[in-house]
Length: 61
Image (cartoon, rainbow, N blue to C red; front, side):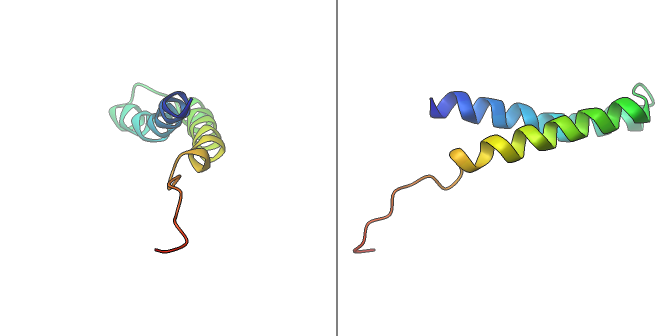
């Protein structure tokens, strides 16, 4: 399950990084860019907390 959540998180992160390259190249409109960035941000923020820093800490540490 953790791998699935990580994969979805990285997909969301990709949706926040990759569209900027397409806008810079002139192949993606600004409206589509904003929608993709919003979707990627929401996906990342909703899935990342479930696996980032998910180690169990010992009381002795």
